[in-house]
Image 1 (cartoon, rainbow, N blue to C red):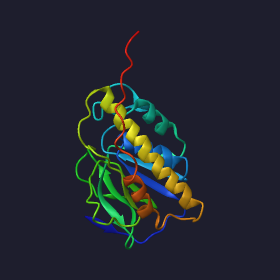
Image 2 (image 1 turned 30 degrees about the horizontal axis):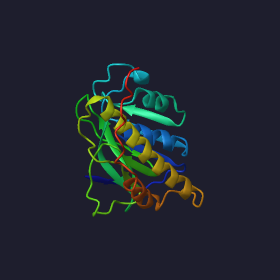
Image 3 (image 1 turned 30 degrees about the vertical axis):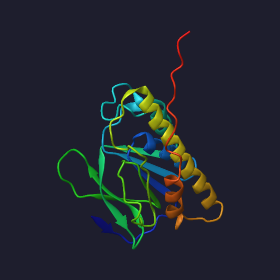
Image 4 (image 1 turned 90 degrees about the horizontal axis):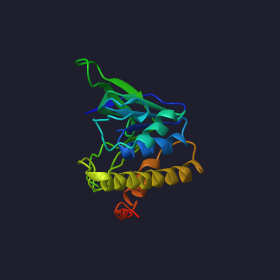
Length: 205
């Protein structure tokens, strides 16, 4: 489902969907480079990474604290994205509604860039519309067992977000807006080295 809208946003604003490790890393990186970043998470988020995050036990508490404290990042928990907003042939934001509280009319949040970090695996042979970057590494969306597995996910998230940040630096050094950025960024993110070595625990002395 998509919703058409004809409007412009005068400042550079990015939306990141999903507050898992990759969503947090991307929100942090984008928040250092853009005027505004909105992080949308369908689950509740414990304040400042407090213990007991049952919705996403693999969510790194330190990364969550950094994002919650970032001055340019606004975290919007309890919202689910129901549609992409197109204007006219590029993504210009998302339509959201509260996850709880009964059916409500979706509300549109406009943006110059939308980063989908929910773990959705798109067919890489199918082109994505301008303005949309899908961040999904191997194994995304599944359960993560053990500290080693969580460390791998966190490391992969940092690598992916770093690739996105470098690509954005290169783009903003040459252009004022984000038109045409997402295709280059998608290639950079897809080419990030996701097969990271498994950390070996250090034996106790």
